[in-house]
Every structure is written in structure tokens, then in C-alpha cells.
Image 1 (cartoon, rainbow, N blue to C red):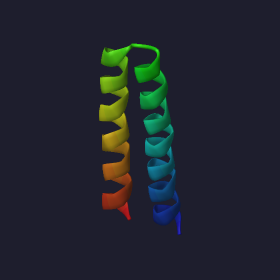
Image 2 (cartoon, rainbow, N blue to C red; image 1 turned 60 degrees about the horizontal axis):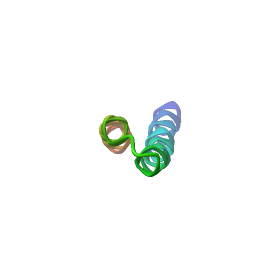
Image 3 (cartoon, one colour; image 1 turned 90 degrees about the vertical axis):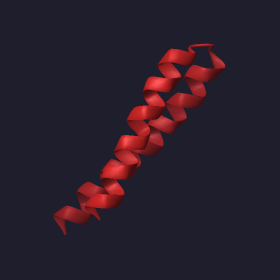
Amino acid sequence: MTENLLAGVMVFIGLFLIGGVFSLFKQGLKIGAAICALGAAMAITAGVLWW
């Protein structure tokens, strides 16, 4: 149960960070958007592998 909960939290964090990517890109902060996208990809990957 706890493992699935943690995996779901990681996927949720990744999706939250994807929203940050769109926000930063709209503001013209491309480097920040790239860093945020990297974090989002790592969080979603961790959640999927943890599942």
C-alpha cells in the first residue's frame, strides 16, 4: 500500500512540475523551464518504476 502511495505522489509531483514548465516557458525563462522539465521527467520515471 505504501509503495503505491509513494509512486502516486511521485507521478503527481512530476505532473505538477510539468505545469511549472509551461509557466516558466510562457515567462521566457527557458533555462528554468528546462531544469523543471528534467525534474518532472525524473519524478514521473521514478513513480512509474516504483509502481
